[in-house]
Image (cartoon, rainbow, N blue to C red):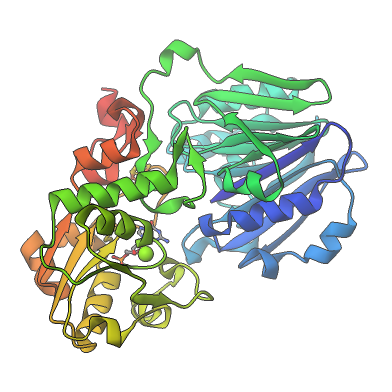
Length: 452
Ligand code: 5GP
Ligand code: SF4
Ligand code: MG
């Protein structure tokens, strides 16, 4: 999911900027969108299903006035995309107005929900944010900020949060830093965003990443920093490596590393590990594989071609609910140019294989163009494990690399050869120390096991 928040200390209206910020984060979630703001001392919201422009009327929002607002674009499998689950969740509770937008997955949610329900909480949705809201409401003897810190201490798993309070905007990142979150500023207005590309659109300067375990409070007095737990306990970090592989936009800088540069380096390293001698061209699977393909082509001194064209108006294939629609989806989305492939030996680069559907369809389409040889190169290691921290669409028994050996998968997708990036190369390409990166979906090294 994607989150964005703005607080204007100089009392400029920020509603349209929040809209634009979310627009730049649309790639992080297409299921629903919502914006909440403070108006006359209480919280107001606009929410809807689907893409941002379907969910919220930009014109009407631009007419509104608020100098403190947050927004959310949601990424979840379809079965739970009821309107009640559209974030931000908002309420006016004993301590005033509040709204919460969350990216991530609280791993002890079931336990927390049970405790809250035993104390009388009635849940309206199945969102992680609502649990945080109830935890705060049950501590209404505390100031909202203190109640939030208290709630965050009880949460396990991943979160990047934007919390709207009457006179402040709060941003928080889990102690492991799974999810990205940045802080920006422009002429007295402060912004928090999942990715820096959303700061660019409002002309804000990237001040810094919100630190793992940090709670940033922005209000009329300026910017204050609190901690979820003592800093010395935050040695092991788990920045999601998949952000650099696929999730984030290439024009973002996450934890100091350019996503574009990381992706290109993955391609270069892949070319060194698994060259494709004598290839006539290198093509990427757009958009997610394009940058790695450029790196692969440069390192192997082979011409790069935009030989597979993508229909810009089709969203990310994954959000289609059924296997059948998903399979069709690839064909609707991607089309190879016959003249470029006919009689040629081609290296095709994609960012990852999950179920193997995309790879199988594209290789067969390229073969139909009369390609002589099709060699598939994947710019990340095999996805062998489900993600426990927020990418919840992957079931272990659907993962292609779990169900088949490399040779079987190569045959299944119909390629002449198939190879992946190594874990070492992935870590090196991201450029962060190994002890700061989560690679669990590739390596199986989950946080829970490492902490034992
Ligand atoms: P497959 O077709 O193998 O199931 O999925 C692989 C394709 O989906 C790749 O081209 C990759 O760009 C994209 N992809 C990989 N992981 C994810 C994910 O977690 N969510 C979404 N929406 N797409 C993904
Ligand atoms: Fe990211 Fe994979 Fe770790 Fe999930 S398991 S947080 S997708 S690296
Ligand atoms: Mg893709």
